Amino acid sequence: MSTHEIIDSYYGSVNRGDWDTWLTLFTDDVVIDEQLAGHVEGIGVLRGAVDGLKRGYSRFQNVPRHIVVEGDEACVVSRISAANATGVPIEANVANYFRLRDGKIAYMANFHDSLPFLPFTTQKLG
Image (cartoon, rainbow, N blue to C red; front, side):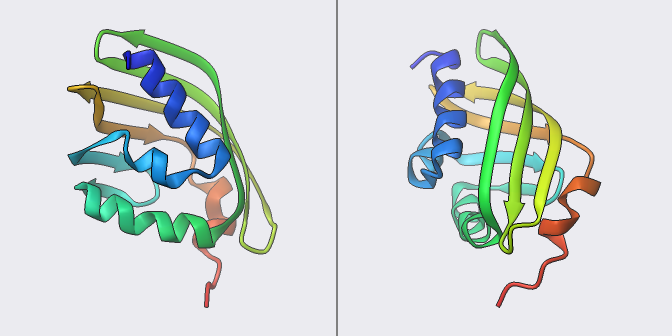
């Protein structure tokens, strides 16, 4: 797949809640700098985080507004429209940077205001 196709697949799988497909888009040694989770290294850690996403959000949409691709790099400006496990809404503008290697995402960073995500980060999950 081309860089643009991988980015399209990333957002498509997120918006379908297809986390298994989403995980296949990353290298085993992926590095992610995530605004809420911090610095993440390795597909195993990312795989473990998926359970938290499934439990912590009752809905999650991340809709790209602008996509810029150059070679093995991409930057996406998007809008997250989600809700925590009990349905409290979350709305945020986000920017994601991707660097690919051998047809997979090897590095990703996201940037957004953390305040809109308080309903997610402060909820008590049993």
